[in-house]
Image 1 (cartoon, rainbow, N blue to C red):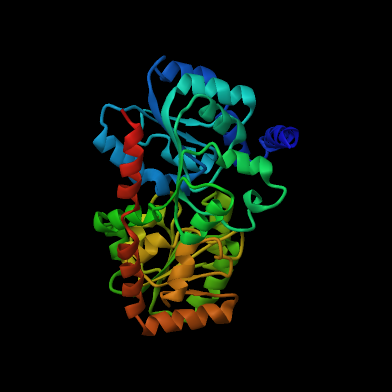
Image 2: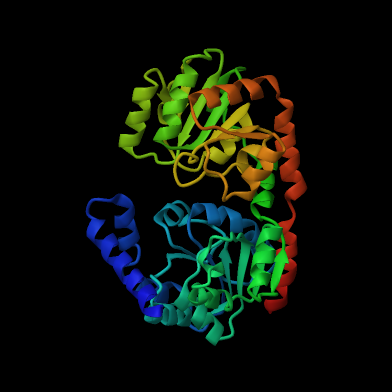
Length: 405
């Protein structure tokens, strides 16, 4: 099985390099790893111990961020190294002030893993939610370096729990402690003989709660919405935007803010075709307007925008899966999203509490919108849910601290 895994890594690298000239993300992925070991050696002091955080992308960074920031406070002398797999994480957070070094993670080959860990010299390693790398995990175990998985979530259909999943189960044996989000994950891991499992919850609740408590005002947004109710559509894709276009024409008294997941020039122009009278956020700051629709054409603003929402629509549910619902819930917004949300415990919880509605089509969207327009109390239900679930970070830090000198 190892040969197949190694071949998969080789093939992935080959594909990325071949499409890099035509794909901006692949280009960043490829360029970010050029000369990576020279960069690591230049920026990391030889022999220095580091706390290593690895994140797949931006969402996982926000999930692990509360733990990272608490370690920075409790252990100010520790050096923190961050790695990302995806450009969408690295490019947004490459200047994050609380880390001592931020890098792309070299692809998971035996030589890369050994060389990387030799240079970074981690005191502990912390991975968030998922992303399991055979060679990195193996070297960490060989060197007796504690490895933690925080906010983990497991499902029965994953390879670990299949009769043919022995290779992947061996990766899990390298983990010192699993901090998982739900009882199902605890039970699944224990069924395959792993007892080093703690039900800690999801650190994202701590992050979104803190964000909602300390959010800064955005005067240009306040001027745009005036006193109108607002549907805030976050992390949208074309399928989401097509549905919203029909809704907007029927509710002229509402303001609509659309924050797409991809903000490339082509996609922004596509959205403008759907909403011909819309204005871009970049233009709003220069010239206030009475437009009904605002398109957010920058990154990093969404988590602050929810403070102005009345109802949230979260994108991705007609594709691979919905994006972050908790940021909206923390501000007391009821949530609407597409049908693909089964991988997200918080989405299932919000649906069960009637603070979220999953829709399949235009009629479903309009019905959900009407429902939440007339039932604002469900926003408080969403907010109470976030407050109830926060606290995972403290429990994780209590355990991890045992391994920090």
